[in-house]
Length: 153
Image (cartoon, rainbow, N blue to C red; front, side):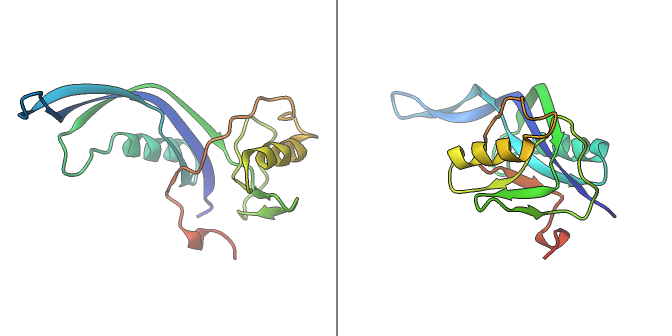
């Protein structure tokens, strides 16, 4: 089965009962609410399966804690370009699939710092419709549905 890689990110609010220490030393469970913006790379045969995997992961309950409620405000996704962009200037293939069409997209960039990442992306995207798009850099996120054995040697 051919697998593509997709980057998913979400804006969520989580609510959970969490132990809270009071001023007199007693601990009680109080409702805590916080915002989160998790992101993950998802491997799947198509965008619909990738989104289902992401949503299941997003709603996974923490082990050994009280369950939390997750309210999803927004989900964004993009298929990854089919090359790993490196600071050597070489674009290394990361899938056997066809190239990603010129759409809003995402890339895995393995470089030494964010300045090189921006330079590498601009150079890669220079002759595409992506050239004028804004760039968002995120540090490494998790991976679902892909194994190292899924990528060529």
